[in-house]
Image (cartoon, rainbow, N blue to C red; front, side):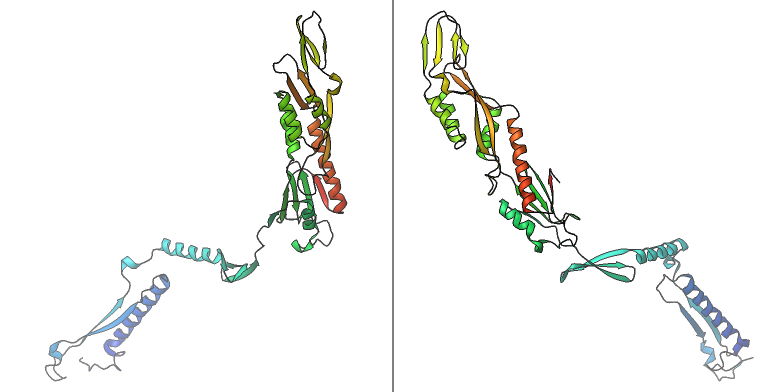
Length: 342
C-alpha cells in the first residue's frame, strides 16, 4: 500500500521496520564507542531516502509512485581500529603515568622542589649547597669554629669535629651530615724541608756545607758550627803513622790530613726548627732535631755529610701534631678532636 511520506509518520512506515533498523544502527555505534574508546573519530548514523523521479512526475496517487529508504552506519575504517593488545598497552601506559614521579623546579623558588606523584603535587625543601672554605692561620681556624652563625648549633653540644695530621686540619661544622667543611693546609717551613732534604744523604764540600747551614738552617742554633767549619785547616805530612779519629785520619803511610782544631767540630749537634710556618703555628710547632756530621778526609776536596739522626724527623712531626691537638683542645672545649684524616 502506498503511503504518503512525512517525518511524523516515519516511525510507523513499513510496519515500524525503519524505526527498528535505525535503533539497531544506533546501538551498534554505541557499542563500537564502548569497545574502542581510544579511537577519537566520531561514529555516524544516517538515514538515506531514495526518491526516484517517477515519484514526483505525476500525482501522489500514481500507482507507480514508490519510496525507498536506506539506513547506514558510518564507523571508522578498519585501518583506524585499535586492536585489543594496543588497547591494553594504552591502559598500562595510563597506569604508569598515574604512578610516575616527576620533579620540577622554578627559578623564582630555588630552595623548593615540586614533586608530582600522579595528580598530586608535593613541596620539598632543597638543602643548601655544600659549603667549603679554607683559612690560613690558627686564629682564623678558631674563629670559624666559634662562629655559631655558620651552622645551626646542636642543642646537645659537640656538633663540630676537627681532624689534624701532617697535611693539614679539617673542620666539620656539623658532625651529622659533614656538609660544611673548612680546611687549613699546613705549610712545612723551609728549615724543616732542608732537614728532609739532608735525610736523603749527600756530601758537600766545605763552602757548600757552610752555605747550607747559613741559609737553610738560619736561626736554629748552628752559628757555632758555622764558625768551626770556617776554621778548617788541612795539612799534609809524610810519616809512617796510621791513626783514625773524628777529624783526623791517616791516608796510607805517607800522607796525613788533619783538621785543626778538631775539638770544635762535634759529631752530633741539635737544631731548633718550626715544623709548620702558617700564622700561629711557627712557635707552636717548634721542635728540636738532632743531627750528625761526618767528614770524609779521603776525598779531594774534603767532603762533609750532614743529616738528621734516624727517626728524628718522624718524632718531630709527632711532637708538633701533639702540640696542635693540645692547643685545639684547650681553645675548643667540648669539641671532638682527632689526630688523623676524616
